[in-house]
Length: 576
Image (cartoon, rainbow, N blue to C red; front, top):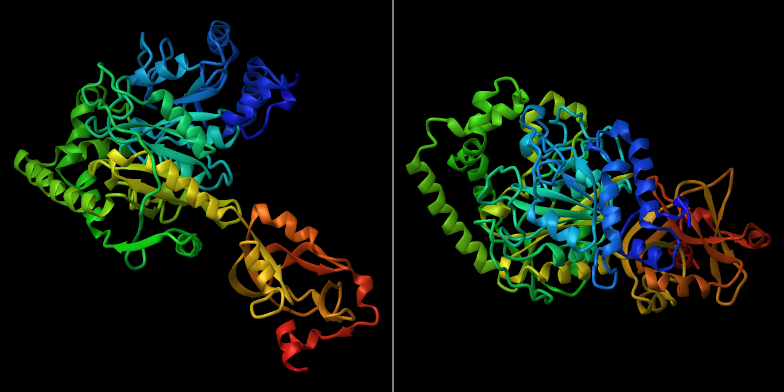
């Protein structure tokens, strides 16, 4: 048993497996989490960080619970600091607002009854009024991968603590994207159930009628396990509802017409990642339709640019008026936007009527279907958000703000990388009565993404004799490319002749290659079938990428014909 045995990437499965094998104990998991939180203290993840004394009663409580009947036994989780945990202060990132609840929020109570261990309260955009993670007196939460970038908000600390191995899952909240944007920016899964599917009692309200408690996790199955424990009607929550939960694969996948908007310093990278995600869906064989998502943008505008924003002011007006100067100026500006003279009762009813019309159209799209959008159209540096806090924040909700207003369920999942340590994500949307379809659709899409990009330079290319070996292993052609100018290409004296790509310190040239996406489960069989002197190594590409691909032992080039001048095997064979 050892703290060192606790995995860096905490997941429910990994922890349960470790407990069963006696590799570590819940006490050692908590000790590892406390160390990691101390290591990352400068990232402003926590308002109330993990502390042995506060967690001890929950560890003690495990002794009275049977792991066989408690599905989350010993699983550590974090709680956004606008959700009640009995005896722990709630600040909503505003110290003057703080109170100490006597009871757990129902969703927290259910998780503890299932054996989960609350470890601390996480940082957030003050009063959940942001999607950037920079609006807190407890400091700007750093991105888990690149500290100069935003973490996303408002559930900033909840996402980052999971990404940094300080909880297996974390609770957030979501009114306009706060449970999804931070997931995308930190490479996680973010699940937002339908309004009312999980109780929202014991949560500091943002827009009470559409607020949702959410979960961040590393895997879809982890989010599903938390959902199973948290879901269900609650007498203490007037918005609670019994939502059906039977899952199947959606029959149609909906994509937006035209080119979505991308923004920020990585706009081009995000757009390229989105195009790759669309290609993955297209080649998966599912039925795809395009829809005009401008209706979603219209609904989203009603949340913060129309009279519906008054709901936020109604929840916090008394505190703001009684405590001048207690909130960030940007927070108060956002909240007071609900007091504008044009936000009349008549305007509110007009907005509600228009929402009902949009909701009817969107429901017609989504019957037995799933809509896929980028979770974010880009990201920002924390410095850029500081220079333009309103404009940058507004952009982050471009593809998320519509969701709760239209009574949709959503699941944000990773969808590859936009760049180095720059994760990209998509969100799946379904009707609330088809909510369980989210997990089925997400697992399907993630299986399609579970590939390795391989560089081939000879007989395995399209139209060549060994192309059937590639397609037989489930590989799909992705793109043509060139190597960096550090290789020479040889025609080996084999039967039939094969190319040998040899890295050289001097006199190299770019060589044409093809990039194929191969299923992970096929990659081992593929590499085992390659005879010496060929093998799989890292191939450096002209654009700076490095991918697995065919390389050749240098000794095999002795006496072989140097065909580097041809620029590639296809050209060389055409010249024969």
